Image (cartoon, rainbow, N blue to C red; front, side):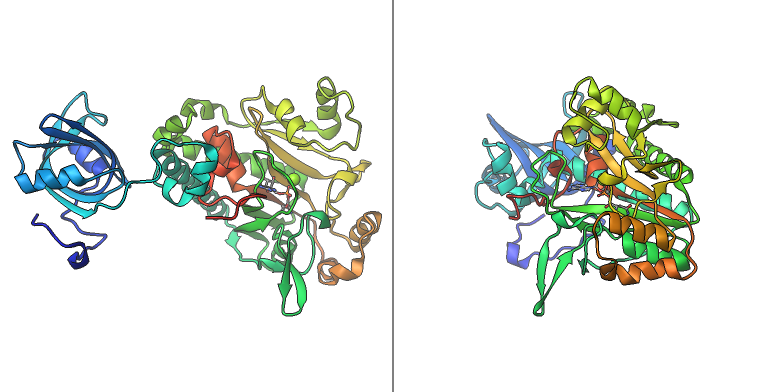
Length: 444
Ligand code: 4AD
Ligand code: MG
């Protein structure tokens, strides 16, 4: 490869003359051209060792003064962390090399040498968030983002296999779904609107035509929370189905969680290991999940939190305690009506509770899914709205769904980041999203 001035460089993504690192490692021998980035560099009398990476993996690359031109050796010497480069050389199996092979270089073509990379020694959490746009290149972020993409895909595949149709909802909305205290207000041509907390009400409208639907979109929550599981903007995977009632919904969610967890275990064992999750742990995520009513779980939680009473919310701390010794999710049903938004259907057998289900991930992670059966008759929904001191006038269109051909229906919302954080066994939700939005952070 002759030296190319960067401004004269012409490239293609699908250029067959370059081989991805993973394929070079798998071959273990032969001549290859590779392109990517320098992860680390080590000089050692007459040889420069690089850890070189592309999207498929990383490998050791050796530039030996005795085997390349003087000019190329000089160029290799200038490369630094995160410089982009083409190498050409001979792959050789070597047990000591990570990945089992290394590339012995015959020519070096820097693409962009660049300046000294800002992420060198300071790996403090705050600093890494400031340079998130560069930290995305790290092995750790790469692994988390690959699992995240896999979880997304597995959700879609599951829904498609069940015959559900994808719908799309607006982000600007005129009212609350999950209660008014967590709404972000946005000016809207002299009026004000809100950023959606959930697509649920629209989802309910769709099921009278399509019967079974799903959507994935950002949802926004303005609660002033700094817990390790809270984002102000998260990706919400939601489903809604006509005719479905609570027992069928619980079975559906359970099957879906098992399916996504097994998919991650099979497709991303190396990523999971790198992040600290033994993929074998996920073999235990099988049917059935243990089920508890809120009343039951409250009794168990009272040991640690004696002040809990019927009607007490189970927050991050309580859920962490409740779930810490489980190895797969649990299902908690029939919460007090006072704890849940008005749309939840009252339990005919126990009017103080509603027909809802939360799925709590094990090992302290807590809630990943919130769902349930919806109030479906007009009286039921208006009754619940009045009990919550809401004005039915603000929800006229939603009430229409109960005026014309109403049917029982159910649905849920799943936080994709919450699910991925648990599957990867990560300490904080921001590790599974490229550009996390939290109370203090909206840059980069
Ligand atoms: O339990 P939530 O608030 O339920 C709803 O929004 C329903 N309307 C959904 C529906 O039935 N269609 O939220 C659902 C899930 C939670 O279980 C959690 O996984 C996730 O969304 N979630 C959050 N994830 C990250 N950061 C936040 N601030 C979240 N709030 C909710
Ligand atoms: Mg919830």
